[in-house]
Amino acid sequence: MFLRPCLAALTLTCASAVPALAQDEPEFRGEYSDWRVFTRPTQAGLVCYALSRPTDSAPRTFDHGTVYFIVASWQNGAVNEQPNLLTGYDLRPTSPPEVRVGSSRFDTFTDGSEAFLDDLSDESDLVRQMRRGSAMHVTATTAAGVATAYEFSLSGVTAALQRVEALCG
Image (cartoon, rainbow, N blue to C red; front, side, top):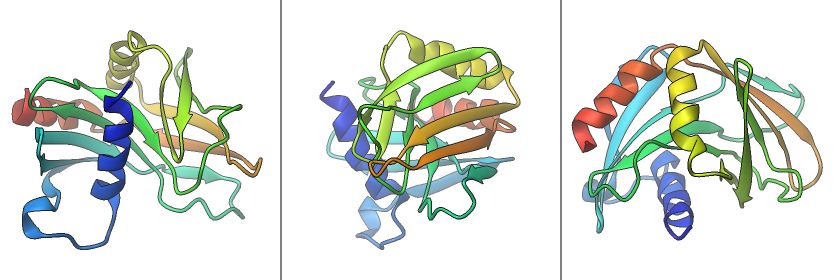
């Protein structure tokens, strides 16, 4: 569980548009349709991740902030293809996001503005479903109680994850 909050802090930094020292900045490694690949050096070693922004968000009148779905791997092997949702708002812990690809549904837990799969054994299943699917749907609730929904295109996710594996595998 310790790695999940660490990854949360890392992805917040990675997704930030605030400039950092050159050695700490994420390095863009490629774009694969709707997915992008980045690497970032850390004290624990290189972190590689693929991310995508939603192609559709609801409600349209709500300020969602920056929302990403991320799949990360650490070169040191501590994390391998760990999926998580990063939102621009705090999530309601008592109503955690749900991720759906096709007929498969995955439950999550929240950590501030991020959500991780409840069951570690589901991570590889979700990633497998993402590689096979065309769209991923995520429903979430803000800490203030606003119901939100996102659709992520899965076009390019397989190539992006292959690149992540080549960089950090």
